[in-house]
Amino acid sequence: MSRDPNHAFQRLLITQVALILIYPLIADTRGVNFLLGLFLVLALYGGVSVTLKRPIVMWTTIVLGVIFVGSYWLSAAIDTRELRVWSGAWGAAFFWFVALVIMKHIFFERSRVNMDLIYGAISVYLLIGSGFGELYQAFALSDPNTFNGIEITGDYDKVARSMSYYSFVTLTTLGYGDITPAAHHAKVLAYVEAIIGQLYLTILVARLVGTYIAQSQEK
Image (cartoon, rainbow, N blue to C red):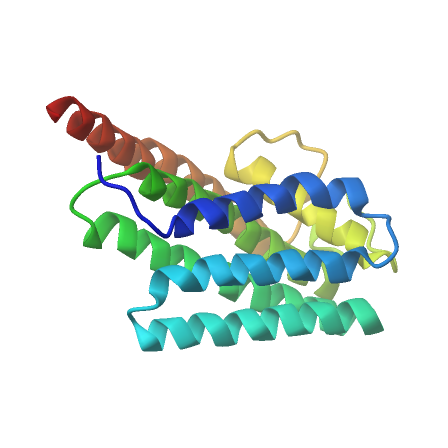
């Protein structure tokens, strides 16, 4: 079994899981947005570290990440709806770009599968959900009638948490129904995310794990 000495995907996955688990627990703590920003910087490092051999991709990742984290910090300091909308849009671009880079590396550039690649595949799944959550947030704040079941108030962090929750419920096709899309573009995004989530797990990740097991049995 081959191993990646850098464990880049493992670091990225740990950062993502920490974000998902810790943020709801400290959401009402003073200064939490700046702390979350530090976690995002770590996620940025994890995403960039797998692209170091491709300067164009690396710098694109860096630029998207810096703009996203910068806009997030700025929106946390000034706390205006317009900045939160832009922060969400840049967040979606950043998360999805990193997801595409990792997918290309995992499924098209590596001949052998190790555990770090499986960590990377899981990271892509979480990045997809995070990206949709950021975009849902941008749409919800730009038009309060985009979703049912969520009240758009001055507490934009609450909106962000609700949209992240809605994104992962949709990605996993859990569908509690407490938040539902009202606008047409939100409905389209919801079923696209659900389709991506199911196909990704049942086809790509299952194929990757199957290859890993087969290669392990060969030794």
